[in-house]
Image (cartoon, rainbow, N blue to C red; front, side, top):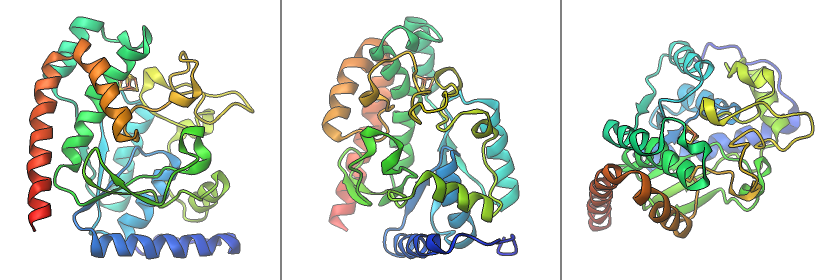
Length: 276
Ligand code: SF4
């Protein structure tokens, strides 16, 4: 894959790429096993391009919620072919999905924030816990300028929910930095970005934004609170616990049993890590 074309990139951005490579090398060497959570958004394609070509010791995984748009699934396949890599897909527990649909309806998430968070819990958060259960670190493509909820992001932090280190290597990258990299390195990207989708999640919960609108305005657009436009994947531990208590118990009793089992496994594994 090192034969892929590397065209000219703006000189002032070279230093950011160099710093990013240094950080990825450090993570690969000192935090194994580490995993990158990719949603195949533009930022994630920057990280994926570098990891797939230069840092193969870092695992790449995705959360296939079962509600992703076809454009994302197409990109997922295209990416694996292009880089000759396997991206591990974590899917929701079938019983939990069935239970949610039976009690709230297939698209019950439109009815209230609690129901929406319950769906995100089952389709995203619980699979993420499984993906991270045996890891020492995980990486995201979060950037500070993406949303008010991300303005105070740190490059690395202790993720108390999953008991491991979380790296956000692109915190100071701008939108232009991301797209400059994608164009210069001919990185594949989601075609929805060309149709007004700056941020892409599940199909029924994402729409294009109008010029001048916030980048995340198209996510859960029917909810009015901009400061809560997160699915819980990147929520602080205290918020996570409150959210899990209020939403899951109501809509996913089966999911609770599954999640409890996973949490037990995570705790056991983290006790082992501490002993080692
Ligand atoms: S983004 Fe929408 S469909 Fe996807 S998990 Fe959350 S509520 Fe469910």
